[in-house]
Image 1 (cartoon, helix red, strand yellow):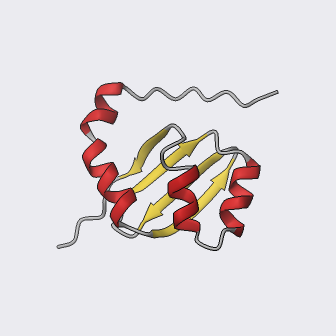
Image 2: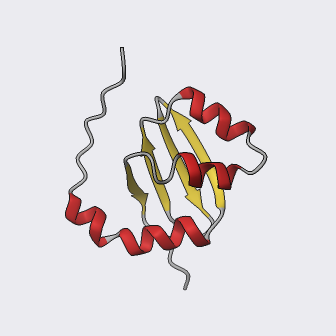
Length: 93
């Protein structure tokens, strides 16, 4: 039986943040990540953190074993899974 995610992400929110999200996933590498219950949380080097829902254990294992985890994530996770921003960008003074 599959996991059900009760996550509501308004299309307007996703659309409003699309430019920032696209910049993050195309111009910033992966700084850190955590995986639990088919949710992969990725913190990018620009300080943005996103949660990706429905990431199977199989995809996560391939991500861990990839020669280039960033490239694998761009091709198989970042554009293929429901996501939401989970933490604010750290502001520098």
